[in-house]
Length: 625
Image 1 (spheres, one colour):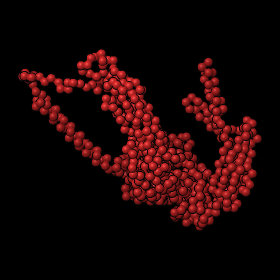
Image 2 (cartoon, rainbow, N blue to C red):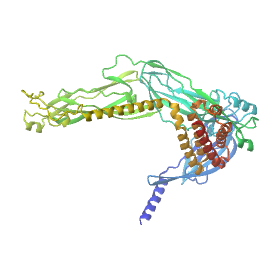
Image 3 (cartoon, rainbow, N blue to C red):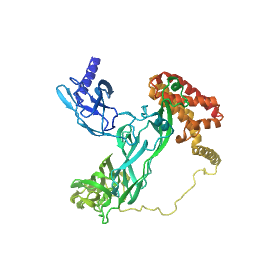
Image 4 (cartoon, helix red, strand yellow):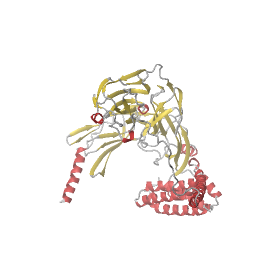
C-alpha cells in the first residue's frame, strides 16, 4: 500500500509539473552577421506543436537549408519532486545577400488549440573591414575547434602572430560625469575573432578611490557583436558598481589577462609533435599566448554642494524613511524599541544610523542594524533598518523629538531632508519598584549584568588591625616551582625554534608549492580517472592537462604566463632529466591538447592516463634527488 501511495504521489508530481510549465516559443538568431555568411535561425518550443512550425517568409534572405527538426528531453528529481521537459527545435540556414538591416518575421505554433508567436527580430548585415567574414560561426564559442576561413596565406601568417584587433578587452561605463558617492557601472567585455582556448592569468584593476561591489554575470554567455566594423564573439569578463569616495579626476585602471589561443593550420608543412595529426592528416594546432588589456577610463567626479544639513552623513541616491516609534504608553523600567527603516536606491551600504535624541531619563543601548541590499546593473537597491533599544527610568510624560535624515539626490542636484513626526509618550510608574519602597537599593526591570548601586557607591572600609597570619608554605621558589620553570623554559625554546623554521618555510612559497606539486597532480589524475570511467572525454582531457601543466608549474616554480613547452624543456634539462623523458612529457601534453579536438579522442584516454601517471612519477623521483 505504501509503495502504491508513493508511486501515485510521484506520478502526480510529474503531471502537476508538466501542467505548471507554460508553453514558450523562442527564436535564437545572431543580431549581426557578415554579408554572404551562412548562419542558423533556430526556433525552439517546449511542447509538441500540432501541425509543426509556421515559419516566417524569410523575405530578403537567401534560404539555403531547412527546416531541420530535432527534439531533446531532460528529467530532474529535486526535493522529492520530479520534473520533465521536452524541447522541439526547427533550424534553418540562411544568408544575407547585401548590406543593411533585415527583419525576420514572427513564427507560430499551435499547442492544445492555442497559438503562440515569436516577435520579429532585427538582423544587421555588414561588410567587414579588411575583407573576409566571421570565422567562428553563429552560436559557436571561441576555442571549440571551429575551422578558420580565409586563404592559406592568411592562415600561415596568423600562426606566427595574433593581430591586435583579433583579441581585445573593452571597458565601458554608463556615465563619465557623476557626483561623489553616486554609483557608476563598469563592464569589462572580451572580444575575439580567433579560437580562444582559455585564460591563464588575470589581473584585476585596483579601483583606487572607489568603494566597489561586484555584480553577478553569466561568463559563458557568448554573443556576436559588431565593433569597429568587424564581427566578434563577445563575452563579459567582469562587471562592477563603483562608488567614488573622493572628487576630482579618478581613473579606472585596465583589466589585464593572459589568453591562450589555438590556431588551426591545415597542410602547414611544419613539424608537429602530435602523432595523431600526422597520421590522420588532421589540422595542426598552433598554441599562441597573448597578453591583452583594456584601456583606462577617466571619470569626472563632482564634489557634493556646500551647505549640507546637519543630519547629512554621506547618503547619495533616492530614499524613503519609515519610523516606527514605541507605544505611546509604557511602564517605567520596561524595554522598548525605536525603529527606523531607510529604503531606496544609492550607496545604501554606507548609510549610517540617524541620531535619535531622547529625554535624559531614557537609557539608550547599542543600535542593532539589519539590511537587504541587491546589487544590479541599474544600481544598488534595498533597505537598511536600525533598531534603538531603550529603557525609561522615570515616570511622566515625555516628548520624543522628530528624527531627521538627509541625503543628496544627484538627479535633482540638491539635498533632501526626510523628517518624522514628534510624539508624546506616557511612562507610568513601575508597580514592583513602588512596592520596594523609596530606599530600595536596586532598580528593577534590568538584567543582573546592568545592576547599579544607587546612593551608596562607596562600600564600608574595615578599620583597625587586619590580624593577618601566614598559612602554609610558599609555593614560589620551592623545588617543584623550579622544576616547572625549567620545563616551561625548555618548551618555550623548542616552540620558538619550530616556529622560526615553520615561518621560514612558509615564506618560501616556491618550496612549499614544489613539495605539494605531486600531491595536487595525483588529486587531478584521480579526477581524470573518474571522468575516464564515465566516458566524459572533455572532462578527462581538461583534468589531464591541468595535472600535467600544474605539476610542472608548481614543481619548477614557473609562472603561469611563462609556462610553455620550451620553458619546460629548459628547466627539466637543468634538473638533469634525460632528454627522452622530457620529450615523452611534452608529447603527452600535445596528445591531450589534440585529443580535445579530435573526433575519436575518447579511444586513447586509457593510454594517455597511464603514460601521464608514469612520466609524473618518473620526474618526481628525478627532480627530488
